[in-house]
Image: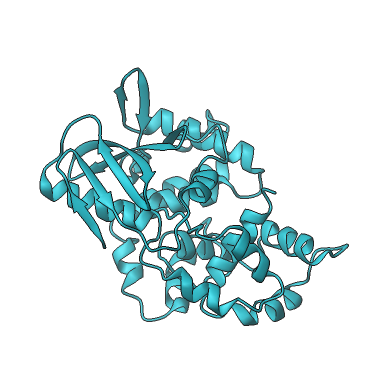
Amino acid sequence: MNWSDHESFLIIYPHKEFNFDECLLFLGRSNQEVLHQIKGRNLYKLIKVDGTLVLFKIGYIKDSINVEFLNKIPSLVTRKKVAAYIWEWFDLDTNLGEFYKAVSKDKILKKITQDYYGLRIICIQDLFEALIWAILGQQINLTFAYTLKKRFVERFGEYLTFDEDTFWLFPTFEKISSLNVKDLRILQITSRKAEYIIGLAKAMKNGELTKELLNQQQDDQQVQKLLMKHRGVGAWTTDYVMMKCLHNMASLPIADVGLHNAIKHQLGLERKPTIEEIEKLSSGWKGWQAYATFYLWRSLYD
């Protein structure tokens, strides 16, 4: 992690393969997003560090990420944790140059990696948030998924008001574990999804499911097995969580509709590709399937 501390602000120095505007485009894809705000080329985010609410503004100047603290100046320990949070949020540990090199001759990815050069997977560090976001989005369109997330966050999340704006935190599994299905049904979340969400919250509260536990597993199959033993967590949700939360670059949500549509469009096909065709196409993405998927998802915005 490469950063410098200036008390009231931080400067983070990303690798040269970093495009802040491309990342902002992804973060701004829905006007229903409730967990961050974008104003111009500035990104506002509230997080909780060791019980303290920290609100900061992120800008990008002269190849560096500038982070300004808004509600108060945190302690040095907290500032280090904020820098680490942002470093992980933008997946800055990943060497994108290696990805570009690996797919430089790929017939699908060669062009789009140039088009979206510097785009990084925007991570969801909190395992509970990653799981619940994936479950909320199952079998509905993205617009309605964002609507449900907004209702869920504004009903059960913590918030901070600053300069007449309200900034939200994703609800904790501790809070959700004490709810019943009816509490979620009033938000238009289906009974089944409500059961899944509360079940996962309870599993995390009793320590049966943690990010640390998943990271300790020896291989992907063990991670998948641990996740999929919980109701509501199927193959797609597992792949999504491995990709966005656990930084597993080999994760490929092969049944994803968006991935199928993007490949269809990029290859000019009249039908969606089969699973066998995707397996064949993705053989050249080995070790970078997550980034290949993320860039193909990005291509759908165009």
